Image 1: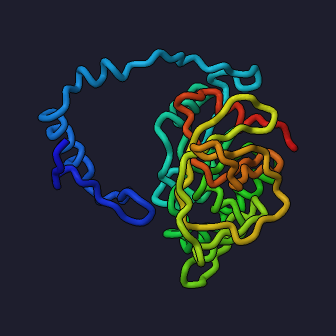
Image 2: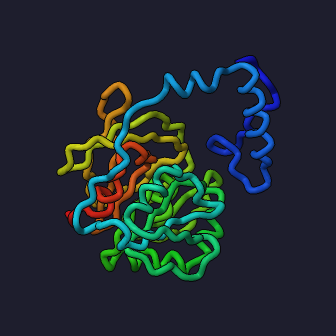
Length: 265
């Protein structure tokens, strides 16, 4: 397609602008108009069709519809694939909560702490000590948690910002992250969890790094798009699983069962 300023997407910290005030709807409308002038959409859809099964294989312990899954969603945690939420909906009822603003953790069988920008809201997240303590207690008591990237950082003990300020976080995992002396980590990832043959797909995109890593075990083999081994761990402590990797569940609908139902190591 020819270039057009009207379809340029605003960027900010770590990529696309996800702020509430950004008028993304007008950009989407401009994209639709621009594409319609230069692309044969019907032909594109025709040649892009693939056969796929949408029926997940669910273990008895995760029968469809019998779980409540609480998903973190607010200004600090807003990077999550829509397909991941849809996949969770096949296991039960999805509810949303805010680690920034809510005072209480909702009653749930599982917690999903998705990616986002905890470093931009570190002071507010740290100040909400009630929520931090409830999530830590949920983890200590065997609650099932899956966290990725920003969610993983939030589960750690502290986060250090570029200016050196340190903020305490949940402490559910014995790790600390920092924005100092960091550089971009970016790329596609292939993940095989210990005890499972299926390969999960995802990506890493972060400037932070782990400055302290405790005794949480790595439970996966991770490779990049060229099938080279990567050092990125998938942490597991009791029933809490966390990683820097954003996993995409659209083509692996049983992923929640694998991530939330791993036996305690």
